[in-house]
Image (cartoon, rainbow, N blue to C red):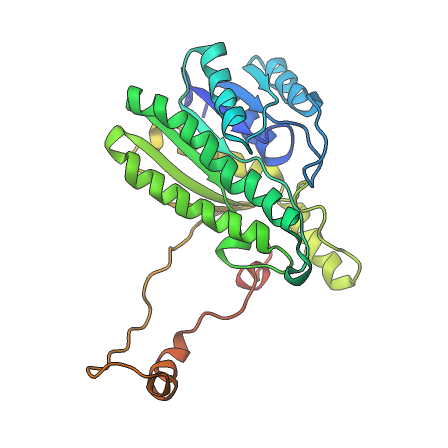
Length: 304
């Protein structure tokens, strides 16, 4: 791994703690100069402090790496531009973006407010677009560059009480695929990682019943650093042929996720009516219906 990011400049958003911090540390250890971008807000997006980003910077420098701090928000076009500009101002270029910044406003759908929805979409989905779009101009000119977007199985599969978060995270996978398609001609790559980890983002999971406590104990085994190697690899030249993919990192398991594709097709030459759909189409398709499941049911085995 040492040297895999030599000469490259990486922007890591949400790098003040958790998965983002571990990615920033490993980027620096691999030779990258790192912009530690984090506004230091609370889990739900309130407030702000430079301390988390400064702490990550200090950890990088203690190990001989190079890092600078940017406390601009990803959630607005202008401030996202400043995050990318920080890389240019400090290091003269930008080679890798990791869209990791996020907040949570978990609440059951029928009680979710406009602010719950807009706040989460603004940071995760809009933020990923704004920062990526700011970097794209430079990537296009230099005909190189990478994006890694941190998605979630809450979007890929589903979860309770996370309509805002799930919609944003699945939207990020479509954004990534679109970037991969649009910018392939410029040698630019875009991929997603769905991380499994115990961090501030998962610490709000309730643990009041024995079943919930057992579930949390399993998640706590999956430390944030387990997600960093894939992010560094995807940002490096070693991954020059990897783009438009969605990976998962689950403790020591590496997962490749599929994208939606047709599973059953039913044809009727004379066309369809609501009645014939009920009588013929749906019965023919029903065996292939996706279950109403959640991530924990799809990944039912203990992390290994």
